[in-house]
Image 1 (cartoon, rainbow, N blue to C red):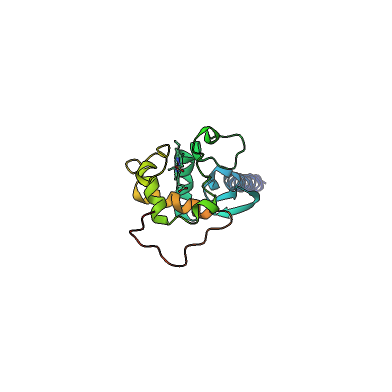
Image 2 (cartoon, protein in one colour):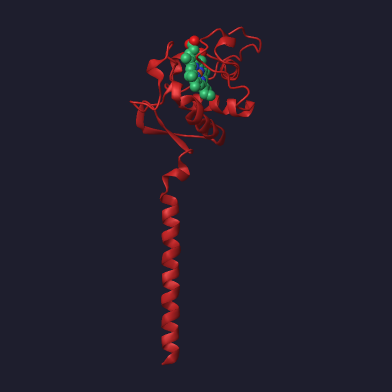
Length: 163
Ligand code: HEC
């Protein structure tokens, strides 16, 4: 009789423990913040989700820390001040503008700023704030979200291109 009570109690504790574990595992999976940097919704079509590599995900983090304030994302009313800027900065998924620019040019304008590249001084230089790796990753992120999708140039550009 005693044995049955003990056994029953043990069984109940085991079941309760297993249920608690399963609950934890489920709530961990459901936390959307854990996967916030794994993908980016297409800015022109929220139904289309772009998977991001590790490098592109680092670029997404930097974009939303540094660049979104001027360049904006797909959020209609902000968080950016883009519409108040002259010239209006291109959306960084704007393939028509950015596909023609080489990776080298993109890295240079981010590192050296607009003035150094013959563009507006409204585009700040990030070379002392972001590492070369971080700048490469933010360029990789813009390529990942480009619409229509980014096509690398058929022929590699000269390293010394004047652009
Ligand atoms: C203070 C506002 C501001 C911030 C912050 C900013 N930009 Fe810009 N950016 C501009 C403006 C304005 C231009 C347009 C310059 C022009 O056309 O003369 C520009 C241009 C560019 C261009 C060149 C586009 C082209 O047509 O060649 C790239 C690439 C770019 N920005 C990337 C970035 C990245 C990446 C970040 C974050 C690390 C960033 N910008 C942060 C204002 C900003």
